[in-house]
Length: 298
Ligand SMILES: C[S@@+](CC[C@H](N)C(=O)[O-])C[C@H]1O[C@@H](n2cnc3c(N)ncnc32)[C@H](O)[C@@H]1O
Ligand code: SF4
Image (cartoon, rainbow, N blue to C red; front, side, top):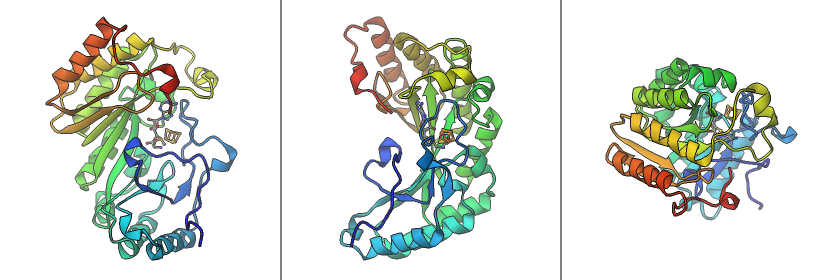
């Protein structure tokens, strides 16, 4: 028997899901409009929900296969599995419980709009059935930046989604994009993104650096005033962001391959150390442990 799951490339998952089984429930992204995002623009990644019978048969087959007991974590793909109705997500989570009892963590990406469409009671049902972590691409807390990039969200709408997940007992891992406001909106982007994080108090916070493997043309068309920040400009923006964070208990990661400087810590304990790492990198770029350009990626 071949591998029981079907993948349509490219498939993305957060770095912290590198050792998880990727279980596709949908292909592509239900929104697919963010000006910076090229993840699901290929024709084969046009958004569609996978057939429920296919997904359930895949889970059943995985459970019967050798190695089932080694599957501890599952990431529900693609770009926004939470777009599916709660009933369908519950079916999947319950099938995972029944056929893959060694699984300890199930996670997925979740767009704020699709989180908001679910009640806290529905999200609690999903949590009780095993969904423990949702990755939310907030990208920014600044409403002007969010409008420019066509995220379809605002500070308030993103906060509402993050609060609902929190109220349901689902851990939140939030992504913020360093450089997204360019020169012109950098200060507002750092300030309002920190305010959004302070209001939401996510359990995990990750920053990525805006990158354009396929070129900047599409992004520039949406945001013509945008000019890229230099490496030092990006590090300054990070320092401005971290300085303003007032987090009570958050794991912070800025170690995705898109980052020039890798930063990791727990907030609030490591805030001073992270700021010192940034200060040193800005003061002594020649000796700073910056990732070489060839090693960067998305
Ligand atoms: C699959 S998407 C996120 C999931 C979900 N669709 C959402 O928006 O919440 C993964 C994340 O990759 C990051 N990303 C996408 N395109 C990027 C780019 N061009 N440069 C840097 N990061 C990017 C964004 O932070 C995005 O939220
Ligand atoms: S960032 Fe998320 S919502 Fe926006 S297009 Fe990409 S996958 Fe879709």
